[in-house]
Image (cartoon, rainbow, N blue to C red; front, side):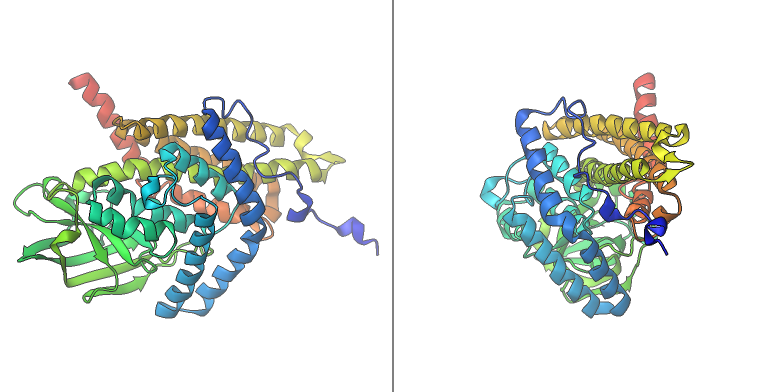
Amino acid sequence: MDEDLFKGITLDDLKMAGGWSVSPGQTYLYAPRERELMLRARAFAQQELAPKAQEAHGQVREIKAGYQGKERRARLREIAQGYLRTLAEAGMSGSLYPEQYGGSNAGVVGECLIDEELAAAGHPGDTIRSVSLVLGTVSILRYGTDAQKKRHIPPRLAGEELSALAITEPQIGSDTSRMQTTAVLEGDRWVLNGQKRFCTGGGLADYVTLFAITDTSTHPHKGMSCFIVPMDHPGVTIRRQLDEVIMADWMDNVHFELNDVDIPKENLLGPLNAGYHVLMDELDTERVTYCMASLGSARRAFEVAAEYSTKRVQFKQPIAMFEGVSFKLAEMYTRIDAARQLVYRTAKMIEAGTPAQLESAVTKLFVAEAVWQVVDHAMQVLGGIGYTTDFPIQAIFRNARLMRIGAGSDEIMKFLIAREVLRTIKG
């Protein structure tokens, strides 16, 4: 039997280096130092992370299939810390943070550029970096005391301390005005009671940045505060591990409760009853970095699909020659290009300290939909093989769907955009 007649195209047959689809036009607005950072991050991601991605996905699947509870969390935590240490050694962990805390001071734009390139490598550890070093830590940089910054930021950038963000509760998601978790000052200690759900990375975290109601006599948005809460503190109990569709993710998504958790008065993060402002500021940064990471994954899906289409032959010609495929490639490229410009604009605004709630909502809505369409097209181009674990499209496909829910759903983004537009009209 002639085995060549039955040989299918594998991922190893795709030889083009990652990032080939990013044209000079897509990065035309980047400053020279930003282009240099992008290329440096790409070289690191493609040379150091991409070759290990498939093995890392398999390792995580084995841990999640074979272990539960504390043992699973301990094993995931160990490999997560190793990954973050690798990033720290390469200078890829502290772009948001000043050099005095071990960062590189590359700003929000620098964080976005690194996020895209790391995500495009397809390594499952990318999420832990975003969760621990952005979601759970950026508010400490912006609102923390000197002592809080020195205590928490350097060990997190080094991979020694992990963090997460705790907002959502069983009865509240987008509607934070219904938050039930409370914090009451008793002497020099805050006593916290309540529950938090969908805390991504909470099972691995040493600390969570947590929001609770501190003044029940006013609207929750005026009576909410932010705290740094140790996850190993007496009274903190993980009730459930919430396994998501993204089974190869390194994160441990948990539902936990706080029963009379007393923490020092100094663990208040930011001004008393200003937690809602802290949260909104964090969300703007979270959304724009999340968008760029998702865009990196979508870019990888596009590059795989495009090169595959030049090698897959049907009806005596590469499928890229058929209009039904080539038009999909054109649409995918256009959406990625447009999305990148939006993310860059919004990242620039946030970095400059310009209010960007409207712009971050516009960016999140557009990019979430664009990424979903790009990955869906990529899956269609690969056909049946794209639906298997032989290619990374199926994993990217599942991640892409989460983007239209996490960090604010499509519907909430539309509400925010419409509210600002109507506010302009009505005054």
